Amino acid sequence: FSLEASELVEKSGRVYAFEPETDNYKLLCKNVAVNVYSNVTPVNLAVSNKAGTSRIFLSQDSGRHTLQKSLRFAHRGHAIVRTIRLDDFCRKNGVKKIDVIKVDVEGGELDALDGMRNSIKGNNNIKLIIEYVPGNFLSTGKSQSEFFDKLTSLGFRKFYVLGKYKIESAERSDILNLEKGTYNLLAEK
Image (cartoon, rainbow, N blue to C red; front, side, top):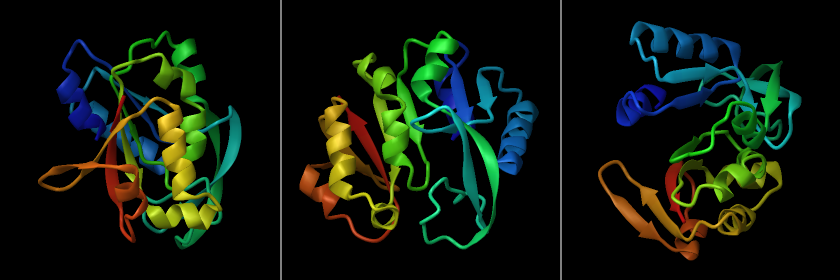
């Protein structure tokens, strides 16, 4: 996604790609270097609701590492990673205008959204693309309603389910009634 985003924003834009797990981060850096993407900055941090450190539970599938111990993925141990609030990262790095945030945090959506509250509220035209797995909320003790309420409290009013070949407008009930599976949601203000 980082490389695709690089092409979309062209030379005038900037992509910050957060990857906390060491092997995935190395692969991200290699992809950026091999493809000579000068507008992508790999960041070896986990986006969360606090700055510090956290355990990341390592999955057999490198795309399913998570800060949420309760998730059902088969873990192969854990590592310690550094965490940051996106609001703090943006302030420290002078990032003011944000067009799109892509979130894929395996059950840590509410924490990540808490840590980017000011960045979202300060950008009226921001788009949020977020991986949505209904089962992850139950596993972490959160609810799908809490997730949707968080999005609306941040000013998002339009929602879409992104399919392989189509984009469908969605209401609250449509999102809350999504069952097993993995979905990508687009949220707009």
